[in-house]
Length: 388
Image (cartoon, rainbow, N blue to C red):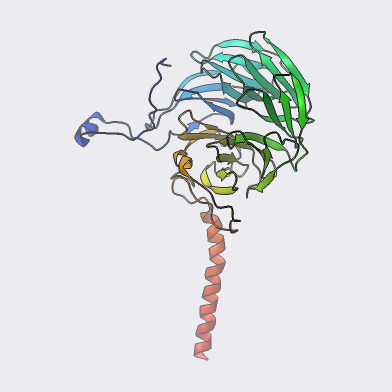
């Protein structure tokens, strides 16, 4: 990896002379990088904070680092690591981009050198249960959550956890922290959100239980709202400092919301078991449209690039896919009236429904076929009536 930060290659080509371009045989420029394929399903992905680099961890416990480019054939594997004995559940870069944190079903925490993929720090039995979630807080602190609801907050300077609390009855699915690094929020399979005070090293409160598992969390509206995804396809909203009960809820037309990532202060993207990535506006609550999909395959995780122009997703199809989300920053939804039911999910990018192939084509054909048959029958009846 070059230590110099470089301009993203996902920009439009500028050739002063078409003949020169043809002569140089420049690689074809794409809207987004090509898919990255793996031998096993990727559970987790994370973008580097300043370079065109993405990390991924798979169900076999392997961790990969790739550089990505919008030039055809431009993606390149930089290194891979097989240190975990079981599935790698979460990867996350340090804020300076020099370290990569990973947690695994094997109960261990690994910290790798981004430059070489070398194992720098290993905590073999970090939890008594399989690790499921990870949050890097600052240059010294990070938090981990496991399958039994245990939360630990670690200090790299001491090499130990200074907070250990088990307030959840089920797995910790996601974590978020406020700008002041004071309150750590957790979502859990027990349907609740937990609030922990890092400054005072104590548990603050737990929200009322919601329907289904809470699977993901995102801070929206400049930290004034907390959005939680759920296994029943509902987004639950909490006011900041009003964590006990929801202020609003929004049922997205999806079987589940398994992961989500904020794109702007008002818009987030969700991934579901149906394989569709939806862009959702928060207050007013609207599904804006589809960013992309893993055809018929559940989506495990979403991540936003350091430029904010790309979204990456990983699913059960053993691929990491890239999507152009640059248009989402200019979308403004200011209509609070209830949206009419029905209608096709709007495509928000050229790749949104499979590179021009309509994702709902089969569904529409099923709807239209009976209609055509009915019209044909009416025509036949009319012909018979005329002959009579």
